[in-house]
Image 1 (tube, one colour):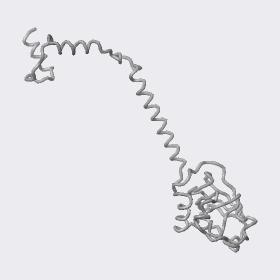
Image 2 (cartoon, helix red, strand yellow):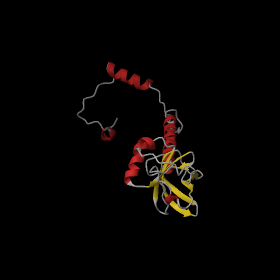
Image 3 (cartoon, helix red, strand yellow):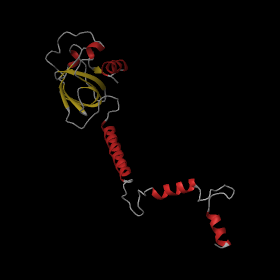
Image 4 (cartoon, one colour):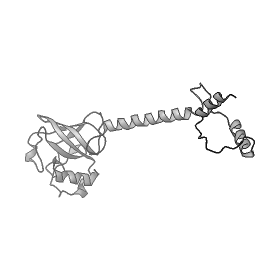
Amino acid sequence: MTDELRNRLSRLDPMASDVPTEPVTTESSQHLLEEIMTTPNLEQPGSSDSPNKRPWIAAVAAAAVVIVAIAAVGLLSGDGGGDPIAATPPLELNAGGEDIMASCIAFSVEYLAPMPVAFEGTVVSAVGDTVTLDVDTWFKGGDAAQVVLNAPQGLEALIGGFPFEEGTQYLITASEGNVNYCGFSGESTPEMRAAFEEAFGS
């Protein structure tokens, strides 16, 4: 080996010149060399489909599926933290049930919690006897984006009744397809919403 070649090799060698080296003839050097020579190369040069890459590709694909699923759930979720709102046909309820003249029971969270249907919605249309609400939050019993009420005019004159006005937000409960009154449904207020969150969970 010429001196020039030695100089070139020394410049390529990242090991500092003052680091002590062990001769290849020692037992530890021979053992290390044998271990290197007998270790199989799992990834063949030029192969893009080697065994150790396949699990990595599969993991990336699985992660992509999870991300898409989470995004889809996020798009269908309401802003209020209640049940998801889905693109299903509107739920229809009767806002003038036959028992609307029955005597009222005192409002309490204890009586509110068993109600099978509960949601918060904003009136987008109130024409004649039909009231349509966009659901802002489902607390219980549904997932439709809209609820349509058969609401005869003059409900405000009945026991616990109230008018429906466009652009106003309401908290509604219903049983057996009929809207409940006597304080169990009405215009949304911070106090009433707090009661719904306590009864059904936020």
